[in-house]
Length: 358
Image 1: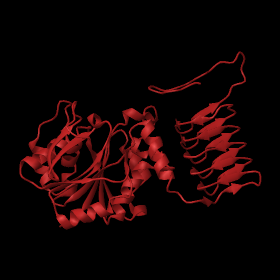
Image 2 (image 1 turned 60 degrees about the vertical axis):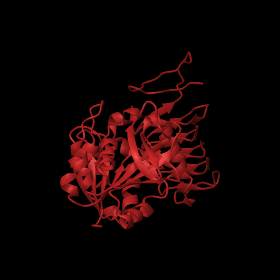
Image 3 (image 1 turned 30 degrees about the horizontal axis):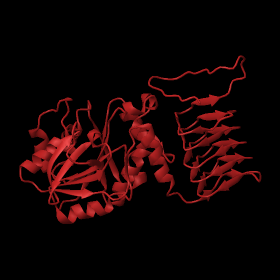
Image 4 (image 1 turned 120 degrees about the horizontal axis):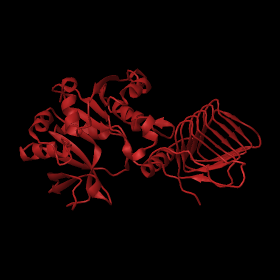
C-alpha cells in the first residue's frame, strides 16, 4: 500500500455550539484546554501519517491556519484545502482530490475524539488493504448518524440519518479509503438535504463489489458538536491527566488528586479537586474548582465555585453564592454578582444562548 495521507475535515459551521461558534471555529473549542482539532492531528502523527490536508471553510479557515500552523509542532506537513461551501463529506473528498492523488488516506472529522487514537486501525488498513475501512460504534440514537448494516461481518448497506434505523451501529468520524472513493463520490447524486453524503459514496463502493470492512470501536468516541458532548469529552480526556503543579500555589490552598496547574497560574486560598486543569496565567482566589473542570489561560475565578465546566481564555467568574456547573464560557466572558438593588438578574447573551437559573 502506498504511503497514507491524512484528511481532516474542519469546515463545519458548528451551529449546535452557538453562540461560542459565532466567533470561533468549533474545531478550536478546547477540550482539557487544548483545541479539539489538535487531538486528530496528533492521532494521525502517532499513526505515522506525515502529510495531512485540512479542509477549511471561508469563514473560519484563517483562524484555523493561525492556530494550527504548518504542522511542524506536530511533526507533520499540513496543506490547507478550501471548501467553498459545506456540501457534504463526499464533496470534501472531491475537493481534496488534487492533494490526495492516488494515495490511500485516513479521513478524520476535526471535531471528533476517539479513545486510544487510530494507530492500530491504520496498521490493520495497511496490512489488509481493503478498499475502505469504516469505524462503527453502537449508539442509543442512531437516527442522528450515518448507520451501517452488517451481514456475516461485511458491510451491506449504509444510510445517512435514517428515520427508522435498521441497526444501532453509527459511523464514527474516522474513515479509511483507497483512491476508488473519488470515483464513487463522483457517481452519487446529492441527498435530500443537498449534500454529497459519504454514506452514499461508501454504499456505491459496496454495490460495485469493493471490499468495505467494518471495525466496531470498543473504547469511547465523541462527536463534540453539542455542549453536553463537549463536557463529556472534557471529562473523558481529563480522566487521563497526570498530576503536575507548575504554577504558584500558596500555603492556604490545596490541590487534591490529578490536578494540572500550568506555569504562570496563581492559586490563592483556594481548593482545586481533580481531575482538573488550570491554564497559564489563570488566577484562582478564594475559590473552589471541582472535578472535570478546564480553566483556560488568563481566566479568573474569585470568591466563586466552578465544577464540571469549561472556561475559555480570559473568562471570569466572580462573587457568586451558587456553584457554576456543567457550563461552557466563551472567551473573555464574565459572570459576576451585581450589588444593584432591588436584586434582579441582568443578562447580555448572544443568539441561541442558554442560561439556567435555579
